[in-house]
Length: 547
Image (tube, rainbow, N blue to C red; front, top):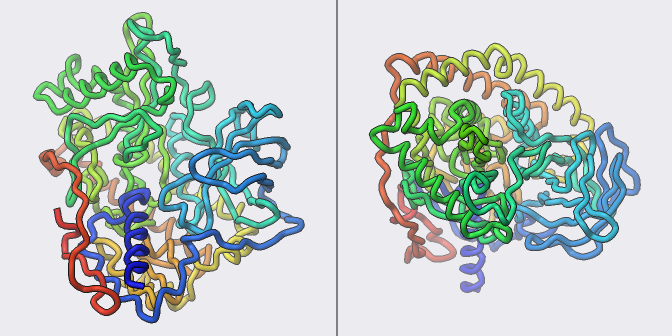
């Protein structure tokens, strides 16, 4: 039995290590598991749950119906059939995500196909034709709007960002809830519009683009390399930044092309850290499209995304123009904002007066952002652009209009959604207690025991309430959808007030807090001795994992 519990614990910790943002970030200690109590009652989120059977669904949202032929997995797409307004045909589908694979509501990668199993570009629900799509599950975002809002703001700022449509999903005759159908980040005229890079483009101007890159954790499916500049952050476990080439795919990327883009990134990052980094010709402006980096900074800081800059951070590089201009690195598109806009209690993401670029996570933040902010010209550009956007795209009224419109759109389906996932809402008393509790940083604050307990207490309760996906990340709970929307709007208004006050000083006396990059290799900690199960719990020392 002891071995079995240890295996469960190790599996759970492994899941945490894979979360979309180092969910173990800045623990300050787990606070102890508190023992297994009367035994582990089961974790619904760690296995496939039984969904509600439906014969016919009526909704004001588009309905997507998927019929599978074989069991789904996260490694390889399987053939299935999808039906929605405007499409009735074959698809490839697989599970997506890391720790979210353990959530009751799963995410899916979709590929529209022809009858021969080949990719087929299809216009889905008013979005431009393509074959690559994603069904995002807003499981740990009770508002269901954080990703759509982030993508919308990025598009309104003048960039391509994934278009979204709120839908309801029925799979194999079972109701799966409200989903976000969105465009995947891929190259294309209506997606990331960079030149197609052929296998024969191996030199000269041909090899210069286009490329799509991402900063994230290592993924064996991608061609990856480590930054030559250490990352920064309070409490980081490693300073190593991992870059991945998303386009071209690993199987199509030629060695010469991989060497080219790696050398370009190395030169860009080293130049940004050099003494001449502010030089308009030899400095960072030679490598990056400055306006896109200005917008990315503003967008990320508004959201206070726990993953900001360090996970799911995309960039693309265009091909050098015939006249020798262009060919610079651009920041964006944006992706993965379910732990943004106040929906997270670690990585300083619940501190309205924190800066995301400073890094407060065990995952490192690229040092280039604090370095850019040391340039008065970059700060002035941020101030000018931010104040322009506050009159339009980032006006409080325009943001609220988007939230309220989409909240009304899904309102008729929320009862059905939360009936399918009742763990997402709590009693009014429990919601009130969590909202009035002091905001804390430093992690989960304890699992509260597997036998009972759970939330409140800032934890990852697994007892009387089952697996608690929201309590795992956020430091508050709600009893209704309307309550969540109210909290989201207030958080955004307060965050804008902070940015208004501080960005106003960007061309005056404001300076970023400087953290010197320190080389720190990844070290996986061993399990501390003592304690045991049950009784002593699993207390980590204050300050998190030992280095």
